[in-house]
Amino acid sequence: MLNDFTGADKVYIACGYTDLRRGIDGLAAIVQQQFQLDPFTNTLFLFCGRQRDRIKALYWEGDGFLLLYKRLESGSFQWPRSEAEQAEAVWKLL
Image (cartoon, rainbow, N blue to C red):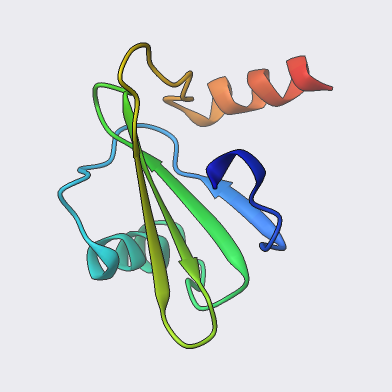
């Protein structure tokens, strides 16, 4: 599902490490407090753990949150650890 998620208007990537032991409420709190964004919008929020082999996605469906979790069996995600790395990755894509 994460390969082709077209339901969201926007996608935000949380740079750096996120404690993936957090559930829906904990991730929604990060979105509100740390990023000053509203988790109750048509937005997909992506979080990655320290080992970069797992990600969680948080999405509001209008009547409740959807929490997606993906763990790679081998390899790791190329995840930006800072806003500078994120800007560099976007520049390379362009």
